[in-house]
Length: 475
Ligand code: NAD
Image (cartoon, rainbow, N blue to C red):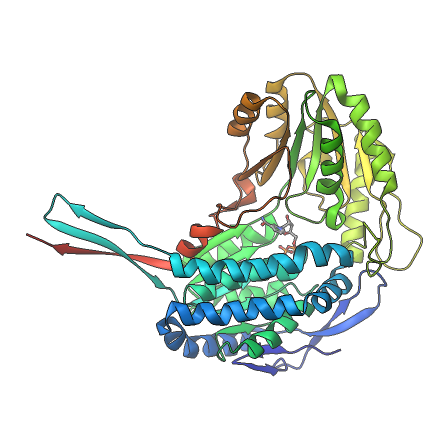
């Protein structure tokens, strides 16, 4: 299969006619050839987006909303096909793609298509002598860059609000998972989204992604990806004074107090550790357990880990599929070796599965302190550490001991403690007795090295519009 860029409503080959391989994680075989786009392709896409902007921005919000709702409906109608594409491209189990990725992409389009109809802006009367009101206008061409772990979901998280607010966009999906983006482009045509409103340019980040960040006609960049890449994006975009949102890496703590519902804590922690092979930025990769229940938790957690079914992502019974790439598998197994060098014990898992593709048994590590690199650096795989703590203050200190601050989970039946601890954790999202419940109205993002800015709900509507204050003299 040979993919194409989607520019001005048509599928076009890259100008340089260069392609890169899209490798299927479950087989290691080439699945598709992806445009290896360069700055010329990005420039073409930006020009198309620029030409489409005035009409799209001027279109009544209700009409934009109708088109985006139609797109949501088409994604929903093609859910099975999209889930299969996502699973083949990413290595995730098809049942997870069916349950999580694709329905959440539908939800993103529905949410922002309707949110824009209810978006009010502020007005203030200054002591009866002046009226100030805020006019929120679309900004122009949004540059949207997304990673491979939740491909369609994270792309739609950016495209939906950008378009709902009246911007046009150039999206650059991950070069590792381009397939559902290509299908989204086709569906956008069926939905009647005008040419040039949504443009998709495939290719490497350092080439096509960087060209998008550098482009003088792209005034805002919404980026989701790793922290190191985020720093590069910021270094490019900041001196050009672009509006910037960075959703970056995590090393999320999962605090389990002795009074927690142990059954729930174990079963949800299994999901929060190993769903999507641990390749979700919100996965809880560091579990801290109060010492009095540490042994009981560990025993049950390890037993549940051993029950996970690893294998063919296309099999609906599979829990854990393949890691995204050979390079990523090498990185993750490197951390397993490091864990042993640092004095840890791999209690279960951590072995490569004897089959083609990039499979790794989910691994549980004990015996490491918070200063170890394994507890400091983002591994982004099916690897979790379990460490005991003695007191609430220790749990908070352990949780906050990394440079990251994306999310955290707290397990306790003590309501006061739940709120007290949550307020002290360095994280943009804190789940209490649950994980990954999402309400699209809430602000989403990280603190410290996990990102800058917030998206979600009104924060996305604010990010993708420029506020103007209009002051009218009344008397
Ligand atoms: P990555 O940073 O390697 O790539 C992300 C995207 O950026 C890709 O499309 C890539 O091509 C592009 N890119 C790479 N170099 C670039 C450059 N110099 N300029 C512009 N674009 C460039 O990340 P990844 O490996 O695809 O994804 C995994 C990372 O994403 C993890 O760190 C994970 O925690 C993070 N992530 C964060 C969130 C969040 O919401 N905070 C969500 C999902 C994933």
